[in-house]
Amino acid sequence: MDTVLHTVLDTVLHTVIQAVGLTYRYPDGTAALKGIDLAVREGERVALLGPNGAGKSTFLMHLNGTLRGEGELLLDGLAPTKQNLKKIRGLVGLVFQDPDDQLFLTTVFDDVAFGPINQGLNEAEVAAHVKDALEVVDMLWATSRSAHHLSFGEKKRVALATVLSMNPKILVLDEPTSNLDPRARKRLETLILELGHTMIIATHNLDFAWRTCDRSVILSGGKIVADAPTRELLVDRELLEAHGLELPLSAELEGLRG
Amino acid sequence: MDSQHTHDDNEIHFHDHAHGAVTHRHAHYHQHAHEKAADKKLQEAHRHTHTYSFELYAYADSPIHRLDARTKTIALVALILAVVLTPAAEVWRFGLYFTAITLLYMIAGVPITFGVKRSLIVLPFVLFAGALLVFMPDKPHPETYNLGFARYSITHGGLYTLFNALIKSWLSVLTTILLYSTTPFPKFVKGLELIRVPQVLTMLFSFLYRFMWVLTSEVKTMMRARDARAFGGGRIWHLKIIGQMVGSLFIRSYERAERVYAAMSARGYDGTIKTLEVPAFAARDAVFTVLFFVTLSIILFWRL
Image (tube, rainbow over all chains, first blue to last red; front, side, top):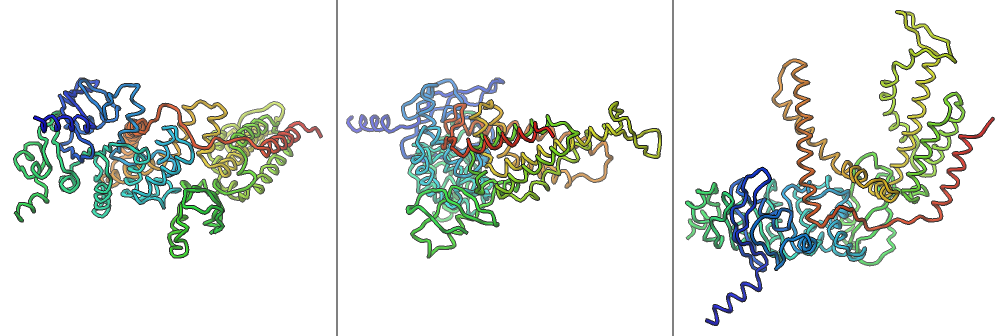
């Protein structure tokens, strides 16, 4: 009894994302999310998998209050209401797929400083936050560069720094590996493993999910159809193929070995 | 490269340095503890390029560069107004304007040739718009010059009007070039904001600056895609394709704008662009403004 209570309490206290029956309809009537139930604990890295049009991006947009659906959603205990919006944006760092959308100012410094300045930090604090964030992604050397002179992989890392500088608790990454060459992808992988944040990573790269996330969730047709430890879920060929995914090479190799 | 650093810790800082012969100022970072061992790293920190070639001198340093962006913007508007109000017949006044502008270029350390070369861009526009002006009859100057064909002659008055348009637009552009060669674009936009230019406009400028390049590369991609598939075909058909490309560029930009907005609000944007430095007017701004307006009044109002 005690252990059950302990588990329940532990879960409640350390849940940073709590969605219950979350639904969302686009203005044109298309139902994008049809009742999402998901609880993510602090420090967990969750891969969000699923075919194109499954509602992954729509769901991610809910996690920082850009979109608001029906149902319950708590982010570190806060509902995404208008009053909480500012707090939530500091709490959840959302990195978009295309770094050219994320980097809209004239220099890397300005872009990384944009969030902290909006948070109302003073000049010295902003500079310190920018330095720390750029150091983490190993892009400090590019402080005064303009985003468009960077390589795609470098832009991706700076895009990550633009939210790291806001000291978020939760990182939400939309397709972090798309268009990256293997070296840049490897680098990002290492970086993600080093960061201690709670993360939700939407990706089509199942090998990447295999190596970075302990838990995977398959979103298909606006519903969560599977939620399990990555190494259990990504070896289920039938389940994966039923939702337009395929067995990752990592899983196949694992199978060969075992 | 300038190696005089007046700070002693590993922080992001500002200092002057040079590459490509132009000394300028930027946010920088380099590790001084390893400076000697890793001189290469220091060079790397400085190996940045400026956003656009038109900004070659924008980050340099001179008395004009140090002026507040607002001072320079107001001076520019005043000068353009004065030039426009000057009677075309009094050519010597334009000479004086040109001399004054050249003087400002010299103080700013921007070669006048840089400005002149870039200002020639106005010629086709003015000539195109004013091509018909030269045929307009004009009462105070009834002289005409026969072209030797057909029944048309160029009128003296028409030539005058064209000259008027040409010299005024050219001087205005020459001054505008000096403004953007002495003011980094972000500062210029901030200045506009502080003199109460509507924020919709100022943001439009700053996005134009950032996405100019993204858009041109999108256009290039589309052109390449077209060239890869377009063989032959008539001129009309080609024009149609270009029309469709313009349309698709519009849609793409529109969608990008939505995504950029989402990325901005995700980082706490609430409708006002906040910036770190709030520039302050200095004594030099007052001195410059007084000198500038006195000179301008003399050129505009002096009677011979």
